[in-house]
Length: 183
Image (cartoon, rainbow, N blue to C red; front, side):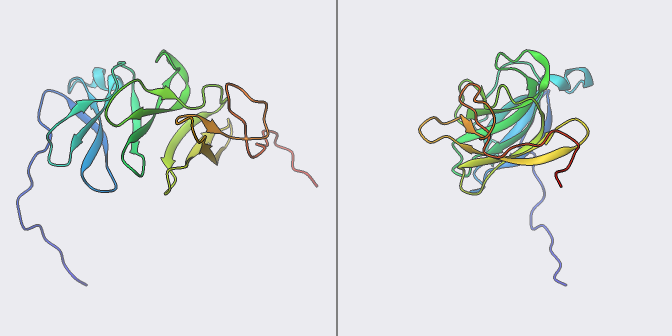
């Protein structure tokens, strides 16, 4: 078994009076998306915002500005967009089921992708080609893995098919919410 060791000492790439709550490195390794709480105090951890910086720690820029807890930031395969989850609605009012949001990696307003989805989103990730999003939906007593295609020509809208259309969303697969099985 080959052994690996670091050739240089580690170096800090973030520094300040805040806490980093989570991060993801872009596929090309050039950028880092991270969740930053405004202070290191436990009571402020629910106010984390999405930030992006280069992988050396420079050029940090704030992507969201809403003082609502956010998590699971993920770069799109081309690095141009970031998806994340938050227990908020489009206005970033709290006490809603966790939703998937999308924002430009350069900043700008974040948009909720499926505002009328009746399920709590526990985790969301991009497909390899960036044309759809996989997400884990809490359906009450169980969770299911779902996939939604991004609508061409309308970045940020998702298609889901076979359910009534709500704000341009249609479910492609019928979701069985009953506990009975067909025979």
